[in-house]
Length: 331
Image (cartoon, rainbow, N blue to C red; front, side, top):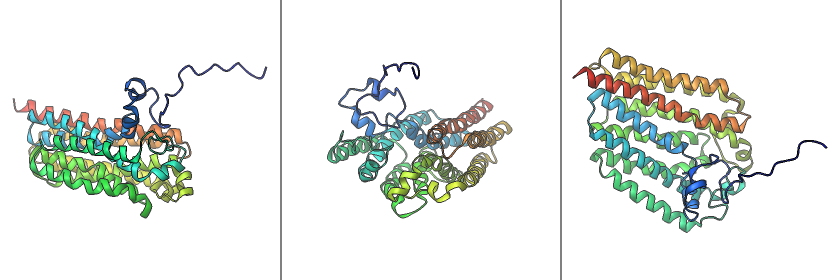
């Protein structure tokens, strides 16, 4: 015998499952069969993108609450942002898959997606995108008028992003512009205005996106080279760790500057410490990622990319504590 007998796979991947989906995700296990292709099109089986779109919104709500005081209406803003992030991430991914269907069919990791695999037609995908967008717009209408205007303005970035990798080596910048727009929108929803703090928070998020999406793009660097798709992973190549450290430092610096701009001069000492702590905790998680990084290991790159949910939640935890510190100090 050359080895132990092979045990049959008792948990085969469900029919139509996407290659890079989270194993055992709720879509493959529980969703009705007819809904699965559409939920896969929305990346509901890969929730990390929703988290990365949502977290800058929550940062802004919590930082604005720490600076200007907590109001129970802010709880709806956090819930509304969560629902909107899920829907708009789904609509954006649907649009991305419509425009990228020929590229996706040529890449090993993406050829199992619903459109190239034949689970959904382009016409069905367009209809699904419209449904998600209309529901998201209805939620947006409950926000401040400035936030509504910013939400409508973000559509230009959403439309452009899928084409960025065709004409620039920096498509991650366009992703950052779109994915972190919620920092501006959510701040406007809380305060009815914009200031230096949300702009710095937005820029911090863009640097963070350059960090995590360059790691993500290293999964497909070889396939992207064959089909002519551009990315920062291909641009930086073996120098990627150097660039990632630069994005890390820039993101942490801008996060700290946003906290200071929001909290000075009225915040108490504990709030200030927690605001700076949000930036430091965020940075230390990215340092941990750098210690684990191997750009030639696609599975590790995907795992580290997904871990950025925790990096963003660290910021939320510190800013929530800063909000509580301000609320209870006035009682």
